[in-house]
Structure formats: C-alpha cells, structure tokens
Length: 138
Ligand SMILES: [Zn+2]
Image (tube, rainbow, N blue to C red; front, top):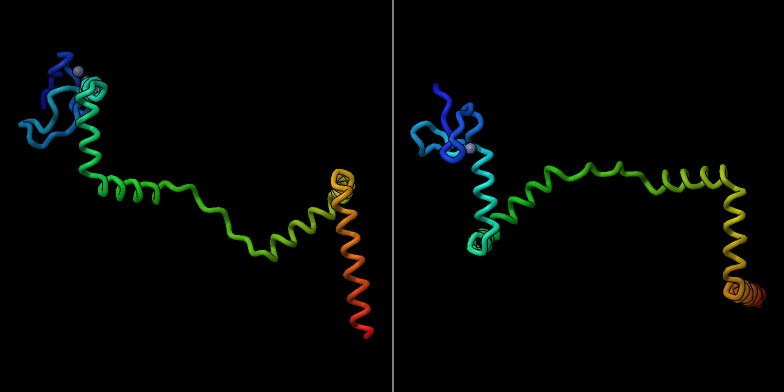
C-alpha cells in the first residue's frame, strides 16, 4: 500500500503515522498523528473548544467516572503485604531491644519536656494504687 500524504503538513509518511479511521477509504485519518495532535490541542485551547470539552464531560459524566474507576483499579500501586499485629509487635520489640540506648534517650528527653504532666500522671498512678490496695484490703 502507498504511504499516504498528510493533509496538513503534506509530508509523505508511513501508514502507522496516521490514526485509524474506519470511515475513510484507506482506513486512516487525513492528517498525520503529529499534525492531528497539534490541531486538536489548538482547538481545545480556544474558548469554544473549552466549551465543547466541558459540554462533553457534562454529558458523559457517569461514563467518564466509570472509566476512571476501572483505570485506577488496574493501575493502583500494589498493596503492601498484610502483617498481623502479632508480627508487628514482635518486629517493634526486636527493634526496640536492638536500639535500647536510643529509646532510653527518647524517654528521658520526653520526660523532661513534659515534666509537669508526667509528675501529675505519676501522682494519679500512686493515688489509684493506694486506693485500690485499700479497697482490696477492706
Ligand atoms: Zn502532518
């Protein structure tokens, strides 16, 4: 088959450089892919082209939503491997043990940053312990 000539840039290009169009005698669009893209972009940039696009989106809202939903389903990033909470607990326990010095430093810094609150909590713990023991003894 002869290589078609683009109706816009008038260059002779291989058939693959033209989008398919079943209604055409040769089954391809008149303009090459590059020219077609430029023409479509130029048209969409005009006020009228934007109106046409918005009207299309409004008319086909549900269809576009369904398409996007399907696309996202197929292109979603792979889900992270599920880990049981027991596995997580074990992981954190080993990590903590391996980095004990660092954790002690964090705890100390936290304590001195929140010293008032921590002292109040300690008072409450003492109080509860005392009254629980009293209730158990009675
Ligand atoms: Zn062209």
